Image (cartoon, rainbow, N blue to C red; front, side, top):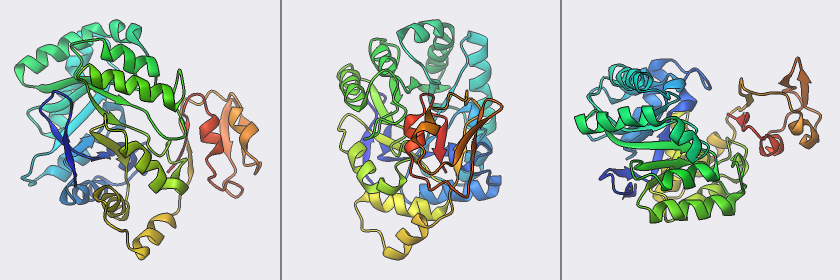
Length: 315
């Protein structure tokens, strides 16, 4: 496993970051013991970096996975708090539920621009105080927006940026892949640590996994790539790819043949753009929400690429 320093934070993170959303109740719904087993498999494969969020409800999974594990584990979390007290409560919750004395990186979740960052400034003020006290080691934002990256790049108090980037531009707001790449270069030039999300476009690039990973890993400004994994086979498969080791054909077959489903997030507003892209007639809008005919869906990913709100994922 390769490791890189994350900007100026002093944190040395594995090139592969474990995205904890997928094991939890919002997606795979694994038991805590099952999910912890998957995370622990990643740690034992050399992954030392875990990405989570308050909304994912995966703190107990991480706590169980790192129990008795003696090597360094770097944890990044995030929340939607915009007030001082709200952020204080979120950080305290993360510390209590992970069983840790500090959280390595704590971020504002899903920022859109410098305007939303300024609108959350009370929360940042708490994070800066927590950093002085050693409760947090770095302050950051996550964002799907080109302007979010550029906005954070201009703020000296922000150490880390977690942007959405993939070769197809799925989910990028305010521009295309090339616009996000330029913004990432600006942020790196400002000394920010960067690690990517959604390299597979929420699973919509699953049939092009090696090409998609190679694209994101070729971006020199990125220290790590957060990848959602929900089975030990996926961990082994991804560890091989990120290590540069060949993947055994039997493992590749198991991972690619794993049953998948189209997951629609609760915030779907029923705009219908996805339906226009579905040649299989698998999608419909019922009571303002997207409904999937699982007998017709072939997981082509065209619907996910068309969604303006990044609601559709293959899991």
